[in-house]
Image (spheres, one colour):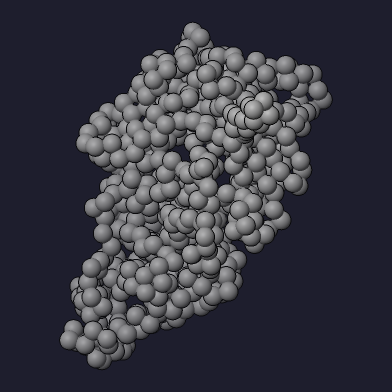
Length: 607
């Protein structure tokens, strides 16, 4: 009996004290544990996956792309004051660093002043250079001063800067100032600093694994049980039952049923990031159950995804990525300077057919440069030219648009809607422009099938559809670098197909299409010059509130769909796989689970 009691006691102790561990795979090792370097030259997806999520920022975005307070008490407003633009940020009083110290205005001011004073390099710190001054008003209030009212930059860059713990970093910064090269010395310090999460870095074995472990007991963790509540109409609430903090969106105000509620953990004691030499080895580890999830910014290939279907213990997800493939026109040249000609080409391109039939569902059709999953900025009213039409109707629409602009043919194409398999009963020949001269041969540059079979295949279909109407487009499948050189450096092209990776906030509208961003100095390769579009971009950048910013971008999407400097084609999904031994708070999210670093504080181990 005594032995049985001892045995049961041992079992109970094992049950009580057994750690809950999740294993993730990384394809490359981390290179730094220093936040100043992490957001500088040490910037990499692998470093971000393991560490970046532990640092607070004043503002952030929820999964729908809505701007929300993070360390701030609420989303602040920009005020014009004595020739400057100021933002007064009140801070939450319930945040604690993992070393137990409170998060205060001192941490905020220290971060921005250190970056500016030492001139910390790196593109991810640029927002911290925007304020002319950052001052502490009281322990829970910080005031920013700006010379220009760059509204979107202020909200989505400056106020989203990662913040550090002054108590920890101040001695390092003071010692750095005594060095011959202060910045190099500071960035070379490999340390584990406090975060505002319950998890923090533990043991690190180069080339083998990185450990993240629970550093703060649940009873003392300020964010334990905090709720993020998503409503049917897009409304959003953050609620902390322990501290009483609550923030509710006002545009829109929450209404309808709750479609998702995320309750903050952490639910595991430890996450071990195992380093694998390549993706195939990591996927083998996933299938064997050695790891629960493979972190990778590009996700899986469609082939890898297909091979994992039906594998016992494996769950699969598909999400749209932050990026798109596009066809660009050189609007400086005839006939691309005629809007109806561009619209006719767009009418011929059946995105649904390309994505779902030709590419077999491996691409997602897009109508605008804002992905639909980016719901905060996406304009649901924008439709592609010819959307929903049959192949015959698309041909006829293209013919009508060309004739409207004054184009004609030696032999006008004849469309037969009663023959859906081959609706062009007589192909067009000798296309002439409004001036009566023949349209010259037009070159469509596309990456080769070896580099990107999706774009190569799409280009060939566009060529075929155009030639059916006598539009003399010839595809040139070529080297990626040749396209970039001719489009961005030499500006010597007719049409080309490439792709962009984009951010959640559509600041890229200015870079790609504003008239003052013309290539080769800028990224506006089409030479798009529309004062109405420029005014909308300016309105977006300088908006007094988010209603104005959203409205401006939605109008800009409508204008781009009409003017077509680009034809937006499709995006490729992010394919991901994970073991059924873990559970994420949600899996339907723009750019995939990897974009949320695998939800370190919200992943659950399924028993």
